[in-house]
Length: 328
Image 1 (cartoon, rainbow, N blue to C red):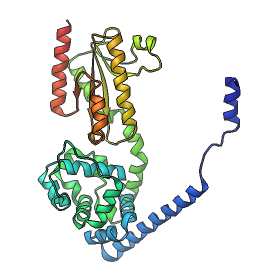
Image 2 (cartoon, helix red, strand yellow):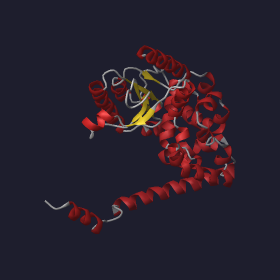
Image 3 (cartoon, rainbow, N blue to C red):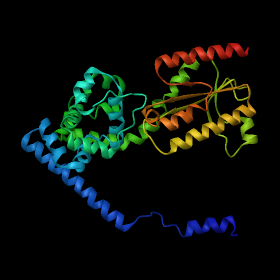
Image 4 (cartoon, one colour):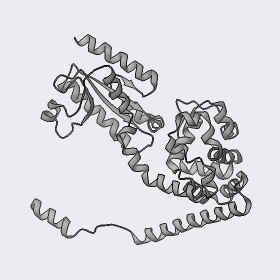
């Protein structure tokens, strides 16, 4: 077997820096060119016919799947965000939203919001092309969505600003805004102050309850390879009474299954090494809502589960008070 240094030097010396497949790159360049041409076509249509709803409806219908990609590129609304938004619209029972999107014309049953499965991108593209009212509803969202109470109350301003007539009219300042938002989407998501864990921290601070974050000593000593960093250890690492983990997801991924398995493993570790501590979770967001199997496995790991809904945060306060009082 080669030494560590030999293997290390091999990777450094023979690094290819970037991998790419030329055939794939060429094919995808053709796709990008097609989307760009579709955007330019839409711009010309808006210039010639005006920024009218029927212009965009015709464009989405006639340009097929390419039309939706181009439309979303102009607004800065990603396909993943659109999938989540459609899911939320299907779940909620809001008269103003239902009327805006003509929901009764493209949902032919009353959705059981406990069992709703998310539409795939291909299904959304098909609906845009084949269902006149789904198409009209989608355009209405970007024309009027910023004025709808439900969206104003439930969508981040970062996304709400994408519902803009200026963007649809190819206003240069609005398109610069789209570019800026796209560039900052990742850094924004990573900002600590935008993390709902802050709500838990605020509650604990308000109640003057100490907490720590990090690794638990017994897990470091006994299961160093599988232990994980804890979000909240109450009151401290030496004598944990409550151990809390937080997972708020607005997107979905195959990693959710791995995350749920990890939490089940952590539950067993805590039970063995800290038998008197209660392991709880904050699990919330549309990303979990649409992955029911992973969600069921995830919540099975916890003694109790909370969301970041105001009434749930109140219940968390009561839970903490009771548990700490009983431990005295």
